[in-house]
Amino acid sequence: MAAAVGPTVSAEVHFRVRGRVQGVMFRQTLVRAAQRRALEAGATNLTDGTVACVLRGDPTAIAVILDRMEQGNTINSWGAQISRLERLDPAAGLPLHAHQVTTSNVDRYSWSPQVDMYL
Image (cartoon, rainbow, N blue to C red; front, side, top):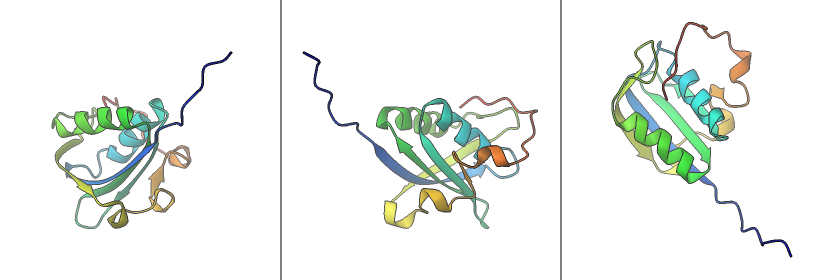
């Protein structure tokens, strides 16, 4: 008899990051990190210099990404670095499909191949 498989646990976390996060391949770095962990992600540059983000999927994988960003280390070779990560109420965040860069459209962009990603 096969073992019963429980429901898949999924989480969705909305947040905004401040720091050196625009013009340094932050959005691609976040989305690629999510893809490597089988998560969905979205990121949007805001006019105040911050980036609005969402991660959806396995809560443990999400926690790893958030923890690494909150450590304040550079997350890619272009110097992307988060000085503050503010978690948002889901109602205050953008829906995944409304973000500029998502796991479903990231390959449509012409990204520089000259970036190493550490996230």
